[in-house]
Image (cartoon, helix red, strand yellow):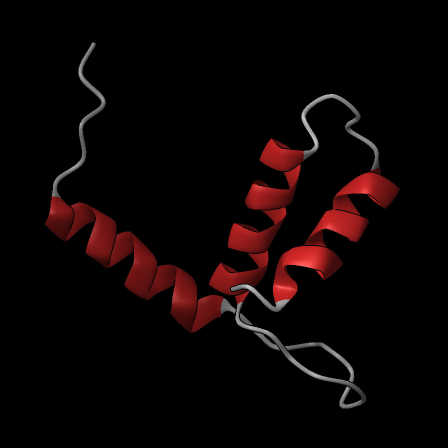
Length: 68
């Protein structure tokens, strides 16, 4: 079973998904890029591998926000 996607297919999927996204966030407070938030979340999960709790992940996200 071959699940390899070509770069053209990935680009097409990305273009289609970006068109359909709506920004329903509040106008209050800062807005962060989605890729930045996901990267920070993944790094925080990897750092807190022993204790996967949301408060631990959130603390790591706050702690490492300035570094990124």
